Length: 157
Figure 1 (tube, helix red, strand yellow):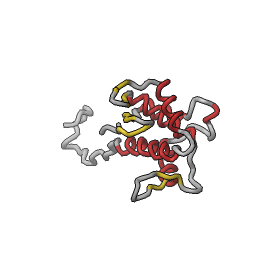
Figure 2 (figure 1 turned 135 degrees about the vertical axis):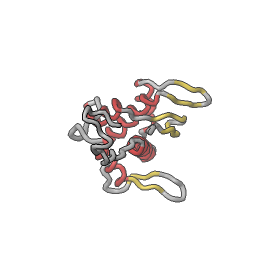
Figure 3 (figure 1 turned 60 degrees about the vertical axis):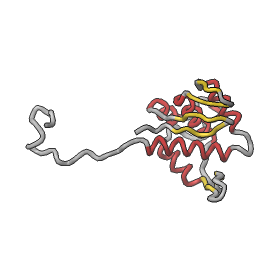
Figure 4 (figure 1 turned 90 degrees about the horizontal axis):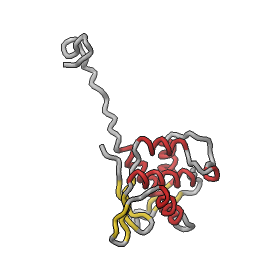
């Protein structure tokens, strides 16, 4: 399953994606020491759970808000958005389509994480993690490996 998601962000529409290398980079934490406000590595699932518990969505407007007492680490939000923008590598603004590299991603996230807009960034980061996690298909292997359908050579029939 594909975990990519296209979202409105920073005045445009961008593709966000967390493939394995970006997932690992998120777990390792921000590379900027000023953004490292907790002990890393931290599981993406832990970050997702923290965000899930810490955001609220107004049912009438769809606006995201950060709930009082929420555990939100701004360095994680910035890192998730930057990693996912670079991995998605696609944006559109004002009718122009373009690729998104590390410098552009950092600039877009910096512009978006201004006072008054941060809750929206938290919601976007949650949506990216949600798509990445729900996009992973964790199906249980069948338990019917018996003598009849499993050969001694290790090749299933």
